[in-house]
Length: 145
Image: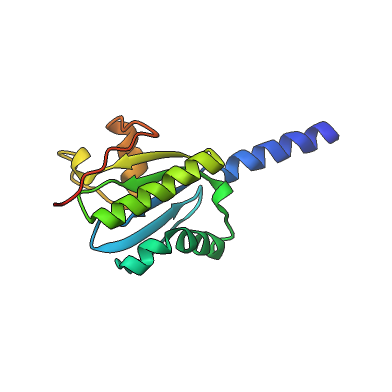
């Protein structure tokens, strides 16, 4: 009976760990999306300097609304630009900190990476990163000068 319980806990932990977080503060709006096994949630904020500075708090608050914590996220996808210098640098710094502290893999994408794709949406970003072989844990930002 204990063995069954341990196996069940391991399976449940793996299921909850398949959550993905998408962060895009390079665009006109400040956008977050959580993709779970069963649902997709998103939130949009104004793209302001104040929100850049509160990015970690905003992410944690958004996760809490869905009964999640950062430890429940298995992969993070962050838009590396082109876009706002401050937004990109802050989002990349936060994602890198999550990687170091929680060992969460991240993928830095640009919409330009997905050439000739017709249906680009945030929900498709994880699959597009796989399709176009976006390397994990590699930062190569694109700023608008």
